[in-house]
Length: 322
Length: 280
Image 1 (tube, each protein chain N blue to C red):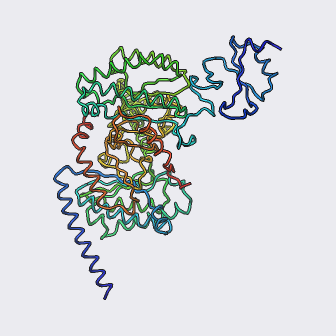
Image 2 (image 1 turned 135 degrees about the vertical axis):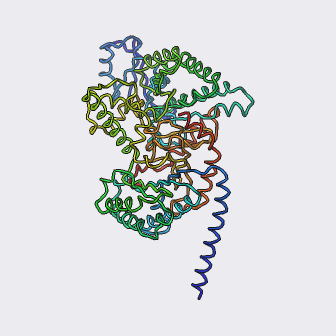
Image 3 (image 1 turned 180 degrees about the horizontal axis):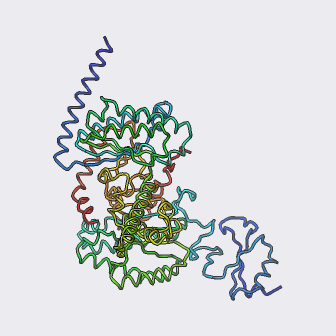
């Protein structure tokens, strides 16, 4: 028998709060040295019904897989009370409105409103990672009509995005977060474009939360650029116009990078009841939730309110009530 | 005798209601009035259940509510009204329900063509927007007849979305835009003029021209009744800058007050939204 105790630590995957301790259904084997055939041989001799081998020690917390792998174990879901796992949205979109109003209400300069907005975004991302069921989070950071804001503000926002990407990249890698940016990035300052490319490239294989940031984005332009790509293919004889269907258009939209391109839930803060040229095609069946709170104030309780509202809604997709 | 008195009383209340409405609308008209309001008429079946009626009667009451709302909109001065009557997704409902809705629609469409109908009284031109090939022949023919019969009306426009979804509409517009551009290029190439590569083959206006809803400007307000806050594949492209209002009232119970509230919200946001539309 290989020397288990020296090269492996074994923990039963059971709830330590239960008493008496039931017989473990699974054993968790965490090799302290790189995985070798002898570890697999140990599994064969183990008394448990199945064994899980985890290569990364850091992924084990209190004998459980979870935390930083981005994919929580079944019994680990830290969903707040009252929320049902099977009715959680897979893709949440947010229009982060009200940063400037929040600042003005407090007599603060507008730029502090934007910074508070970034903190709110971090809070929401943290919650998504913690709960683990929301797989995609799309945020409307900068609309194509926001260029008309004062130049000082726009420049500050561009610097804020760049700083955010640089500062958070390590965190994204550690938390297995993937970042994508949608919208016309050709109009953004060159340094920011480079930071975006670096961040998207570095995180493209991450399998945890997918954060999609819409910068210089317009829902109508997204559809037009999809149409443009299709037109070029048709011009070159690659497709016939009569073959154009919804599926083909979906493949050309900016949101094609997402595993779940259609948001289940759209949250808009600050009380305005409109979509403002955000995802238009993708919102066909999205539940819309409007809240009076301004974006910098948006935290766990506001997010829970939105999710509770979402879970109460009956989604019929045009068909009959179930 | 009593019945006569009741009828007189009802008539009096209706007249008073009409006067009050005209008064409120004249005040509202001091500010900007929406030029296009769209309705998602949700809640007919729930209303029928609530009143212990069959589903079909819920839809009939819903139709009367629609006629009232049309009257209010046109009295207010809103020239365009669009309604979501039947989605392509609704074909998924039970065959009996689909059949009953189709029969009701045929009956009501034929009613629209009559002399004394609301559309002729208010000079309303009617359009049926959607993939009409999906409808059964009697309904499709009735729709085409109604469009022909009201073609000369010019005071207002009623667009009825039937066998419609927004994704289908956009796909259809993309298809037609691409076909048009390919034809243009073919003509240029064969005439010897050649095609000069342009950075943007297709733009926003190309797509908008080919939408079914090109007969009207984009809506200013979309009202969806019964408290559901989603667009359900209705006017997705067109809703970019419009106000979304979702009162919890069921469609057959909608009243002029909901319209007034929506218009007030529109007026509050008017100058901001006009600017946003120009910037887009």
